[in-house]
Amino acid sequence: MSIRIPSMLVRVSGVLVLILGLIFWTGHLDNLQGIHIALGIVLVLALFWLAALNYRNGGNIGLSVAAFADGVALYVVGQYQAGWLANAHWLIQVIHLVLGLAAIGLGEVLGARLNRMPALAAR
Image (cartoon, rainbow, N blue to C red; front, side, top):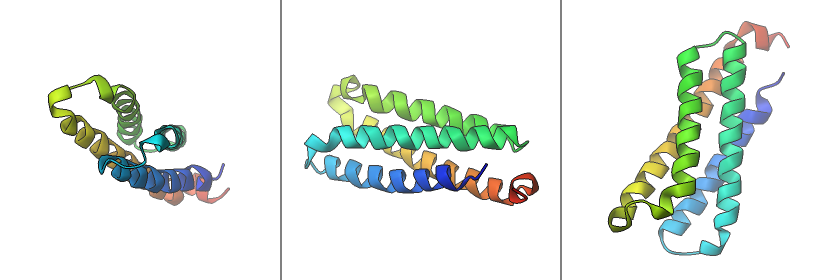
Protein backbone atom coordinates (compact mmCIF):
# COMPACT_ATOMS: atom_id res chain seq x y z
CA MET A 1 0.00 0.00 0.00
CA SER A 2 1.29 3.42 -0.92
CA ILE A 3 2.13 5.84 1.85
CA ARG A 4 1.73 8.81 -0.47
CA ILE A 5 -1.92 9.40 0.47
CA PRO A 6 -1.49 9.62 4.28
CA SER A 7 1.76 11.55 3.90
CA MET A 8 0.11 14.16 1.68
CA LEU A 9 -2.91 14.32 3.98
CA VAL A 10 -0.58 15.12 6.90
CA ARG A 11 1.18 17.81 4.91
CA VAL A 12 -1.84 19.52 3.39
CA SER A 13 -4.15 19.33 6.39
CA GLY A 14 -1.29 20.26 8.72
CA VAL A 15 -0.45 23.45 6.84
CA LEU A 16 -4.10 24.46 6.52
CA VAL A 17 -4.81 23.77 10.20
CA LEU A 18 -1.78 25.83 11.22
CA ILE A 19 -2.82 28.74 9.05
CA LEU A 20 -6.39 28.68 10.36
CA GLY A 21 -5.21 28.30 13.96
CA LEU A 22 -2.95 31.32 13.67
CA ILE A 23 -5.77 33.34 12.14
CA PHE A 24 -8.04 32.36 15.06
CA TRP A 25 -5.29 33.30 17.50
CA THR A 26 -5.33 36.82 16.09
CA GLY A 27 -9.07 37.00 16.71
CA HIS A 28 -10.28 36.70 13.13
CA LEU A 29 -12.52 34.31 11.16
CA ASP A 30 -13.86 32.39 14.16
CA ASN A 31 -16.71 31.19 11.94
CA LEU A 32 -14.24 28.81 10.21
CA GLN A 33 -13.60 26.74 13.34
CA GLY A 34 -15.61 23.84 11.92
CA ILE A 35 -13.20 23.61 8.98
CA HIS A 36 -10.25 23.79 11.39
CA ILE A 37 -11.70 20.92 13.42
CA ALA A 38 -12.45 18.80 10.34
CA LEU A 39 -8.93 19.31 8.97
CA GLY A 40 -7.49 18.52 12.40
CA ILE A 41 -9.38 15.23 12.44
CA VAL A 42 -8.02 14.45 8.96
CA LEU A 43 -4.51 15.18 10.24
CA VAL A 44 -4.92 12.89 13.25
CA LEU A 45 -6.43 10.06 11.18
CA ALA A 46 -3.62 10.31 8.60
CA LEU A 47 -1.09 10.21 11.44
CA PHE A 48 -2.78 7.07 12.82
CA TRP A 49 -2.68 5.57 9.31
CA LEU A 50 1.08 6.15 9.07
CA ALA A 51 1.63 4.83 12.60
CA ALA A 52 -0.31 1.66 11.77
CA LEU A 53 1.66 1.14 8.53
CA ASN A 54 4.89 1.63 10.45
CA TYR A 55 3.87 -0.89 13.11
CA ARG A 56 2.54 -3.43 10.60
CA ASN A 57 5.74 -3.32 8.56
CA GLY A 58 8.07 -3.82 11.51
CA GLY A 59 9.09 -0.22 12.03
CA ASN A 60 10.03 1.38 15.33
CA ILE A 61 7.16 0.58 17.70
CA GLY A 62 8.04 3.53 19.95
CA LEU A 63 7.52 5.91 17.06
CA SER A 64 4.11 4.39 16.32
CA VAL A 65 3.10 4.65 19.98
CA ALA A 66 4.32 8.26 20.15
CA ALA A 67 2.34 9.16 17.03
CA PHE A 68 -0.79 7.51 18.39
CA ALA A 69 -0.39 9.19 21.81
CA ASP A 70 0.21 12.59 20.21
CA GLY A 71 -2.84 12.19 17.99
CA VAL A 72 -5.07 11.29 20.94
CA ALA A 73 -3.69 14.16 23.04
CA LEU A 74 -4.11 16.61 20.15
CA TYR A 75 -7.72 15.56 19.65
CA VAL A 76 -8.57 15.74 23.36
CA VAL A 77 -6.95 19.12 23.90
CA GLY A 78 -8.51 20.48 20.71
CA GLN A 79 -12.01 19.34 21.62
CA TYR A 80 -11.99 20.43 25.26
CA GLN A 81 -9.62 23.42 25.35
CA ALA A 82 -12.41 26.00 25.58
CA GLY A 83 -13.30 24.91 29.12
CA TRP A 84 -9.77 24.67 30.52
CA LEU A 85 -7.86 27.40 32.32
CA ALA A 86 -10.13 30.35 31.66
CA ASN A 87 -7.57 32.72 33.22
CA ALA A 88 -4.65 31.32 31.22
CA HIS A 89 -6.31 30.02 28.05
CA TRP A 90 -3.26 31.05 26.04
CA LEU A 91 -1.34 28.23 27.77
CA ILE A 92 -3.78 25.62 26.47
CA GLN A 93 -3.55 27.19 23.02
CA VAL A 94 0.25 26.89 23.10
CA ILE A 95 -0.01 23.24 24.19
CA HIS A 96 -2.46 22.62 21.32
CA LEU A 97 -0.05 24.28 18.87
CA VAL A 98 2.92 22.23 20.13
CA LEU A 99 0.94 18.99 19.86
CA GLY A 100 -0.10 19.95 16.32
CA LEU A 101 3.47 20.70 15.28
CA ALA A 102 4.55 17.39 16.83
CA ALA A 103 1.84 15.56 14.85
CA ILE A 104 3.07 17.08 11.60
CA GLY A 105 6.68 16.27 12.47
CA LEU A 106 5.86 12.69 13.47
CA GLY A 107 3.91 12.28 10.23
CA GLU A 108 6.91 13.46 8.24
CA VAL A 109 9.29 11.16 10.14
CA LEU A 110 6.98 8.16 9.72
CA GLY A 111 6.54 8.91 6.03
CA ALA A 112 10.30 9.15 5.47
CA ARG A 113 10.98 5.94 7.38
CA LEU A 114 8.23 4.10 5.53
CA ASN A 115 9.67 5.25 2.21
CA ARG A 116 12.99 3.66 3.15
CA MET A 117 11.49 0.29 4.15
CA PRO A 118 12.46 -2.36 1.59
CA ALA A 119 9.11 -4.16 1.93
CA LEU A 120 7.21 -1.03 0.97
CA ALA A 121 9.69 0.17 -1.64
CA ALA A 122 9.17 -3.06 -3.61
CA ARG A 123 5.40 -2.46 -3.88
